Amino acid sequence: MTEEQWGVLQDQICKAIGQNNHKTWIVPLRFAGSTPEGTVTLQAPTNFFSTYVTQNYGDQLLEHIMSVSPRVRRLDIKVASAMTETETRAVAQQAPANAEPAAAPQPAARGHLPGAPLDARFTFDTFVVGKPNELAHAAAKRVSEGGPVTFNPLFLYGGVGLGKTHLMHAIAHELTQRNPHLAVLYLSAEQFMYRFVQALRELKMMDFKEMFRSVDVLMVDDVQFIAGKDSTQEEFFHTFNALVDQNKQIIISADRAPDEIKDLENRIRSRLQSGLVVDLHPTDYELRLGILQSKVEGYRAMHPDLVIDDGVLEFLAHRISTNVRVLEGALTRLFAFASLVGKPINMDLVQDSLADVLRASERKISIDEIQRKVAEHYNIRLSDMIGPKRVRNFARPRQVAMYLCKQLTSRSLPEIGRRFGGRDHTTVMHGVKRIEELRLQDGQIDEDVEMLRRALEA
Ligand SMILES: Nc1ncnc2c1ncn2[C@@H]1O[C@H](COP(=O)(O)OP(=O)(O)OP(=O)(O)O)[C@@H](O)[C@H]1O
Image 1: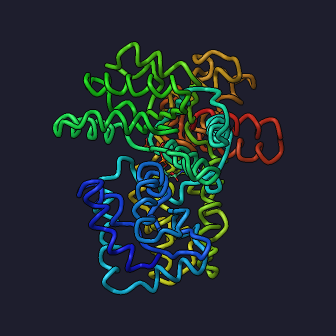
Image 2 (image 1 turned 180 degrees about the horizontal axis):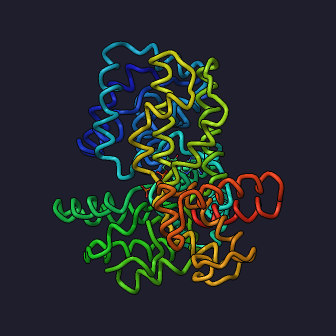
């Protein structure tokens, strides 16, 4: 079988499967070679693509190929990374006439792809595990091993930018790596709705149902999107049930727990709760620092001359406590600025280039909150902490609270003083200083303060 023969076959394949399917699924394939043992290799743009085409058109394509080259016994459709050197070279050396259709189909094909593309960077290797996400990570890992379906669905939820999509893509990558024949379909709930509406409009509901029911693993991201959209919910429910009945794995993500998603039909809610529901908690300082360190390592692998002053990553992990996306964005901006001005990344650069991010992520912890938490921690009444009594039992917690107000809010010393029973700013200053000293001398105080800080920032 030669590349020319593959070209000649296109008309016949197009007639057999229809122009749209041909354009979407076959045109993007590139001829990568044929062995004397009778194996023809075609290159597909993505793993999903290769799985889908193999499952849906593999036999037909082989028949067409055998009609012009009867010695062929096997058809292999794989992505570039899975190809041998000879195959890669064969694709690279293809005549310019082939170059256009091979390059063009990517975007055209993507538009028709039933699923969304996976981000190659979102793997388990690049996912940093910490206390807030260790359960979600463990559950995702378990599902990614394949094997018998133990919990269905796996429902991952958590706030914006905490790694839900990252984990889902990681599962998809791992599953297809372990078993390239597995049909793994990942898409957002919005895309699900879009496909559904399109199928209704084009009277292709049978194709839609068949496609969704033929996958081995279905992943739907941001499922809260279908809340309040009745027909989409209905179709989702049927798809869900059909797959569960076939023992196919379903993985769902949302920004909140199933029982907190409003306007979701009860029967869907209870289906979503019927497997394993795990949440990604807001990041803590250690996890944020770990993520920053891991991103820096990745960057340094390509830019060995990168210099970051001590304390910069700690400062960012401390100050940017919103979501990981913001944290990553800040780091990317620092890398860009540092390389533009050819300087090391130090605190001056951080202040210059990230002023807006730092302002936006300024902690919104209130003085009230700090006072309440500290009083609770030391088991004293709030009124005693704010009141005039100077006994050590109240004075020390008061100083701890003042210290935390100075550290965690942008309030001035006089303002803090006012909120502590109208005390003078020098009293606050003294209190803050005292705790700074004690943190160095007294392990217990240091531990208390650190614990309170974490609790307040969580
Ligand atoms: N634990 C982690 N380790 C490494 N990177 C992470 C981690 N958590 C999140 N990220 C990164 O943060 C960014 C946002 O993550 P992701 O898109 O998965 O969030 P999400 O929870 O799906 O957010 P959304 O609710 O907006 O959909 C991604 O670039 C992701 O790689």
